Image 1 (tube, rainbow, N blue to C red):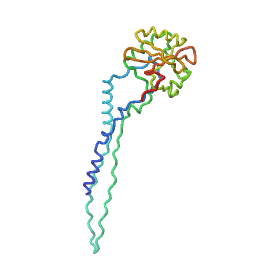
Image 2: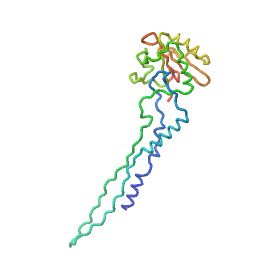
Image 3: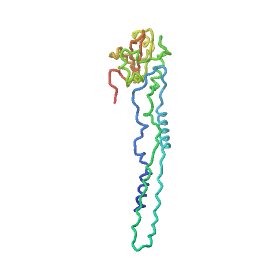
Image 4: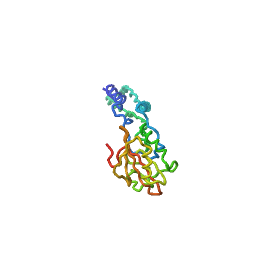
Length: 242
């Protein structure tokens, strides 16, 4: 019976139970990102790159697992009985508890700090035109203090964590929203531009080209005479999906 118990115990230790669990690296991260200047954002990965990245992450996770194998306990040898008239009781054999297997996992993408947005190819082409805006501040950072209603755009103003759906922001100094809008009409002549409802203290405009749709929110800055441009991947007045 002792050999059978040891065999079952070893099987439970070495069986790859982790393979039955869902891969944590494949869980999608949240939609909220750190708000950064639109013209400083980098393009995101293509689906093929994402597939290769996921495979590499899975291999790293498998390699990083350290399993402590339990060595089988030696079979106790019988103790010779002393030469006496009365038989002595047989010794009681106690088994030492085996060490449980420990695993070390590599960090997954969901454990990383707040990240900035990654632009799609169409978003990259869309944002590149904003570099031609007259009055666009190139070096000045854009913070929550410039917004008249920062709670509409920030989940955490200290960490510059934006609301879900915001891709990034830009700032044009010494121009009112209506002046910035006239520039946008000239920069995007191949887009259908439709005014939407007001949000956060400024008008929202839908920019559509085929199946590509994005929204620009023009806000008069709280400090100074400038305009904030917020790029949304959804209509701001609608709640984010899921």
